[in-house]
Amino acid sequence: MAEKFESVQLSNQTIQRRVVAMGEQVENSMLSLVKKSSYFSLCLDESTDQSDVSQLLIFVRTTFEDFTSKKELFDICPLYGTTKGKDVYEALKKTVGRIGGFNKCSAIATDGAPSMTGKKTVLVGLLQENGVTCPTIHCIILVHQGSLCGKSVKQDQVFQTVIKIINMIRGGNRSLLHRQLRQFLVETEAEYGNLLMYNHVRWLSAGKCMERFFSIRNEIPAFLNKYVLSDTTEQEEKFQDPEFLKQLAFITDLTNHLNSLNLSLQGRNQTVSDLVGIINGFWNKLNVFKYTLEKNNLTHFPSCLKLAEELNSEKNIDFSCCSSQIQQVINEFNTRFKDIESLKSSVLLYNNPLGAYIEDQPPDLQLELCDLQADMFLIT
Image 1 (cartoon, rainbow, N blue to C red):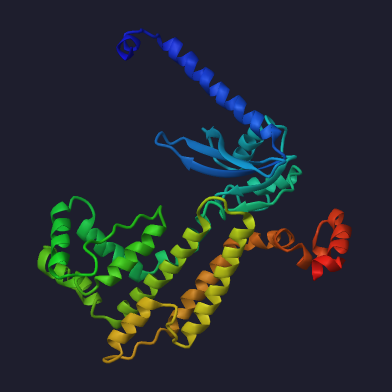
Image 2 (image 1 turned 90 degrees about the vertical axis):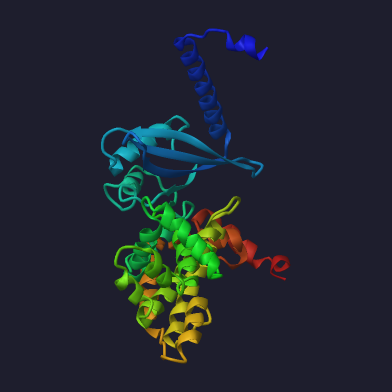
């Protein structure tokens, strides 16, 4: 039967018509789904494809009367010209206009690009000017903000040195050197049998890369000296410098903490209140990290503690100066996640209506909240 189907000749026009028909069916099903929903939220991500055309991806999450929800890719809008806020707004407006506008839109999440954040000529400003009052969240769902908050780490000189050494061993056409590294680590019974490459697009790779590099820091200079043909004296001397090792241990622990944040923000079936709670919890952790480091308390920094135990017999290692870098991350969080504050009252009402501040809630809910919070049965 399959051979008979293979022998059937189909013209290009027939294939095109069938592809178009299937596309229209999927599109109509999606439009019908969104129109039937009680509320929907949108997630925007702008990226450039291989042909250098900017593509605006619009994801939709619909919620129905029975509290069930569905998430789908709603539309892909090519932006052939500029990708300014006005261009993104016009593409979004055209797409949402097919389902009746923004009346049922409960929230919009963006990827935090410059064309989407701000108050005037960018997407958020244009939405507000045209009467779209739903909350606009930047990157909490997309997890980009945690990556952006790691920029102070990426700019660190020690971090750049680590990436340079890894690329010296594994970057480019260095297959032989890579095989020699793996064999060398097996022979020396190192904790890990390989180095990981770093990818700046995937922030999680930074933490894993730093963790593995720190674990085999004693084997790397010996390998450089034995197998790398170019002059590696400068890189080898770094591993004898206590300041370099101190910063290496600190960056390793900090990137691992940021990795934990990123992983906790990902996953299915998480509500906005879950994400806000995770961010607020990490905010508190950063403050704990800061004041413990100021006292040179390394309880929350295992790599720093391990290095201190190794070197304190020879040299006194003080990590209190690293607290300034924690403050840099705190400052970045204050900037990147400031829009979370606008959701605080709504999240509190959702999680604990008995503890919500009545004056912070919408006027149409205040009287009902007064009765609810005064109900003795609920209070007890």
